[in-house]
Length: 338
Image (cartoon, rainbow, N blue to C red; front, side):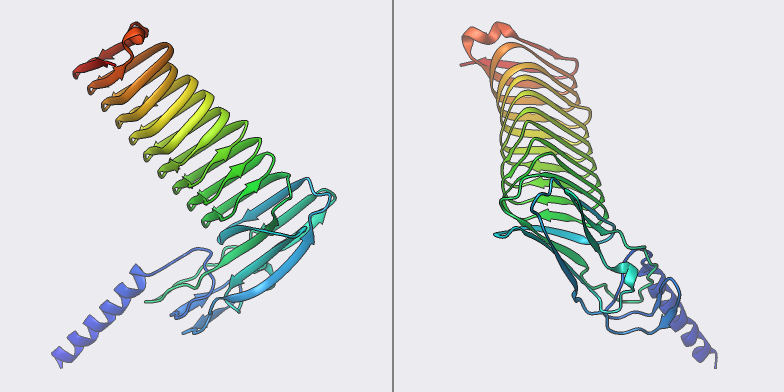
């Protein structure tokens, strides 16, 4: 009898642990298998189903539109180009959504808004998984206007080449990926928790990139001003950054760049090294904890390299060496001549 009771207790403990470790309280809606689903006004036990499917589609003409605004809460967002003057929005998710869970598409004069900020429902999942909930937006390829995208919880991927006006992209929790060339006036991309990936070129008057928690990785950037700020996570510029003024900061993480061609630059890293293959311009490179390694430095004016804890290594043209000053509190300094 004791063995039976002990076995029952063990089984109950396993079930409770399974319940606790797989609890998800978020905006997720629809599980392929769920222990119970607590919505806003009902509780359904042992709910099955909730497969992902197209649940809504709507379109609007972009003729005369000056600005596109998108607000989303818990969906993955995919933006694609289409050879049409019509913007189309598709929502995929479970087939048991309430009316308030669907996006709203409106055209107000020269504004188009896509509102997918449905209320967050608490979902508790037992040994289960959630279905894919996403919003797909087809934007006319030849439309040029301002774009404002704001997502709370869910990643964003811009899959095709676009030329817009002022571009503002903000994501509270989730990564941002731009797959193809992006052209604009002011480009402002910010994420609180999640990485930023700019896999092709970004051409603009000004570019501002900020990640509070997550790395930043870019390819080619050309602008009048470029500013990149990463609090936790490294910054990697895989190709060329060309600008009149460049400001780059990392608090915790290294900074790496291939070619940095700037009229003026201000580069700082609090915890993590700085490694640049080629640096052109004038300005400052400061590193509190970590070394500075610049394979080739071509100064157009005065350049100061300073480290608190770490060494400095660079190579400079012989006739421009006098423009470079180095300071290393703890670490060696090597300045070779070419």
